[in-house]
Length: 399
Ligand code: PLP
Image (cartoon, helix red, strand yellow):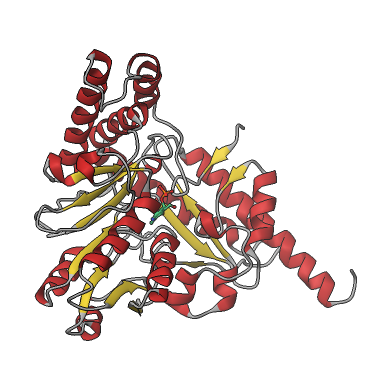
């Protein structure tokens, strides 16, 4: 069997539609979009056509979309610029405790510059409850940032209620929608989102391109200073081929979203059933104990995300063994792979170090098949049995 790629939440293979569009753009749309001659005008038109597609995908106006280098830049821009713009009003910022590091480390940066950060706890399913947000809001709260869906455990947040809680207190609401974008239906106007971050490489587009939606009602400054690109809000010559590839990926992802959601939901359930089957006690091995992290598959969980913990085993050694079996998956967020600390997301949900250290995340996508998932479930059980046997031998002094 070929390699099995189950890490779509870390990054996804390029969609053929995006590849074709980019291949063509790299040779034909090389002009600088700021130039006045024909090549520049062609690049400018491609840029604005792409902006229209992206704006429609979240119910925004074209002038509210600003292309960036990806989710990390969008998150940094949203938080830093909003904090600076609202400094007169207050210095208190609220984020959920299970945000991506692009948010949490930006908050550390802001706290070194005099802002006070509150990390909102989540419940055992990873949900950030609107009541706990209301309780944390203070008269000097200027900004609330809660992700639309979590990258490690797939929990979908009640964004509409969270945004309205923030607005009741006069705070600006940002959401990191990097994992949810083009997977869930997003309408920034209906949900009253002020700022939203998204990234192309999670949806079959190229790496190094994303956008920040900035509602026309919110006035924030720039993060990057220089030329007058993106109407003076984000300097730097536009990466036109990447923008074109991004728009092509958005179109392709949206055209099959409903059917893909249904398929991935079925695959999620199938994988969990297979895992239950393979981890049962066998004549030559004991039952493998595993736990699902996050909500049951359904409307509160991102289609395609499966996060499990095998308490007592360590993610890193399981990852290596699974890799040798041809399977690519992750220990939580890709950015923490290799780091010895337990995942802050699982710790935030369960405060259980063993559970956090034994976490595996499988994220499926359009190329994933039942056959691949059945094989993966079988290999997880086999790897876990081997590791438990090894632990027993060590405990009994055999090795
Ligand atoms: N936010 C979330 C929730 C993510 O999952 C990621 C990527 O893993 C990012 C932000 C960073 O996005 P990018 O890789 O485009 O910088």
